[in-house]
Structures are given as C-alpha cells and as structure tokens.
Image: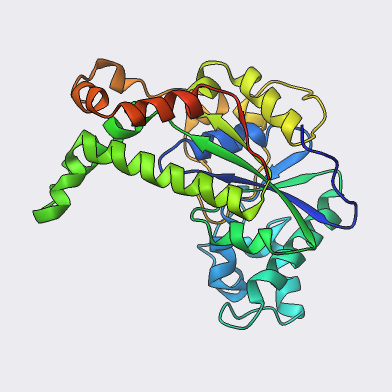
Amino acid sequence: MVTSTHSTRATVTCLTSLSHSGSTVFSMALACHQNTVSLGEIYQVLRKGPQFWLYATENTCSCGQPASTCDFWGPTLRKLLAEDIVSPTSPHYFQNAYRLLLREFARIYTTDMRAIDTSKGVKHLKLLADDTQIDPTVVFLIRDVRSYACSQTRLARSQNRKGVKKVKGHHWYQMLRWHKDNKQRESLLASLGLPYITAGYEPFCFDPPAILSLTDDFLALPKRQESANLAQSKHHVLFGNPMRNCETRKKKVHYDHRWFNETDYLAPAALLPFVMKYNKQKVYGEGKGKG
C-alpha cells in the first residue's frame, strides 16, 4: 500500500498504458469510486491551450456540456486565462498549468477527491516526477499480448497497408512491439521513482472487484461504497474516449474475446517464450512497482 501523501502536495493518479489496452474502461471503473473523478487526457488538453477549448462550441465535455460551461473545465480554463497561463510554448507552461488545474480540482471537489489522468505517452510522467508540488501515483495497465496482437494485427490488415508498413499485419511484429514498449514504460517508471502498481486488463475484466480493490488499496483510497457500475462513473473528459455514446457503459465491463477463436498467434507465441513469460508475470501477477 502506498504511504500517505503530504497535505501540501496535490495528488493525482495517472493511468498509463499502450494504446488499445483498455484504459478507457479501466479509468471509468476507477472513477466509480466515491473519491475519484476521471479528467481524461489532461496533458493533451493543456497542449492546445485554454483558448482552444473555451472558444469552440464543438469542444464538448463527456458530461454533455461545452467546455466553457462544464462544471470543472469551465472555471479551470478561465482561471488559466486569468493567470496568463495560456501558451504551451512558454517556459514552465505545463508545470504551471498542471499545478493550477489540480488546485482548481481540489477547490471544486475538495482535497478528499482524486483526479485521474489518462494521458497517452510519457511526457506528463516526466513532468510530474520532477514537480515537488505534486504527488503522483501511477497505475500501469497491461493487456494480454495475445489479445493485443490479434486486435492490432486485425486492425492493420483492415487498413490495407503498403510496403514495409505491411509488417504491422503480422502477429509476431505486434508481440515484439508490445514487449518492447511495455518494458520501456516499466523501466521509465522505475527510473523516475514514481510509485506504481501493475494491473492486468484481463484479470480486471474477469473479476473487476478484486483488481479494483487491489488498486484502491495501493492508491490509499477508502473502501468502495458501490461496485463498478460504469453508469456511476464520474468523468469530465475533454480529450480522450469517454464512451459517452456506448450503451454498454451503462451496464458492466465487457471483454472482447474474439481472439479466443483465432489461431494465427500460436506459432509466434511459441517462438517468443520471453514475451509470453513477461506476459504471464505482468498481466496475471500482482505487481507493485517500487518508486
């Protein structure tokens, strides 16, 4: 379990994963906790600056409101303008913007609440690790390599890629990429000294309460008052995939099991034992990182 945080430091939980690894559903389940709210990909919102989101009516939050009238993003974006934190190219912009955002979050929701950031990439992790005013914790989500490879191979083949890009339509390539990219992310988390827990997407789908309980304990959150009914998820997502148009989000977690009926991944899996060993350790074993 993570130790208690200092009251003077703003807390945030970052959900990090490769793309197409189930982070949308997992973040919604995390945000069903009474003390959490998902804000989607915070770093990507800040990259565009507050004016972009405030002055375009098509920029709708997952709560259903335009950014300018959203209960969270409206006042937060206007506060960024008021304090002249507006240009992503200016020195210390991201640091100052992230700090202000978390201050506004605490003001709106109280310090008992935890913001969830689902930003892709790793730049925000480096930023947060270096900030003495922010206390980040990380959930590192990993999807089963067989499911990932089948999904990505299927997608690549549907795009009719040409030339060397056709390699993406092979299971062995997707398995090696999965292994390399996840190992790199894991090494980065360790080198940055960020406290993190590894969560397997498949164990989560098959037993949500068990995985969420482990994650909540690591994040030092109190016991959940309700189960992970995705309809109860609290989120203000400007950038990301909140599944707002998907009816299944109102019911429960659904797992894409199409790969169960596929066989093309079997030969690459047999020829890449180090990939399968890593998959077994990280996806199906409880893993608390040391930061």
